Amino acid sequence: QAQLVESGGGSVQAGGSLRLSCAASGYTGSRAFMGWFRQTPGKEREGVAAIDTGDGRQYYGDAVKGRFTISQDNAKKTVDLQMNSLNPEDTAIYYCAAGGIAYGVFDRRKYNIWGQGTQVTVSS
Image (cartoon, rainbow, N blue to C red):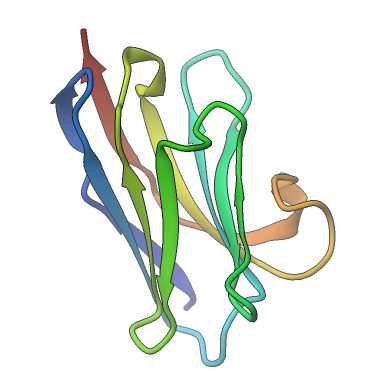
């Protein structure tokens, strides 16, 4: 059974950093895109960062550009999200996702495998 498992969430003060990791298992080959999304209560799940696993091209949501970096290790089937200069507005549950080539990079329909999420809390 294909699954994604996130790790690395936690609590940090504003201005601090966290690194999230997503490990894929249960499927052979690779998915065309890997992405990170986040969600807070009462809000839509928001695209944070995505990477084309073929050419390594990275995509970022406007709210995190210049602060977050997505990276991949194809051999290990992991995708990391380095988050710097965190602020309280970054507080959310962060989800890893894997998907194909259809739809835009932050369109949730693109992704057919989702992790269970990891909580990130940033205090002021």
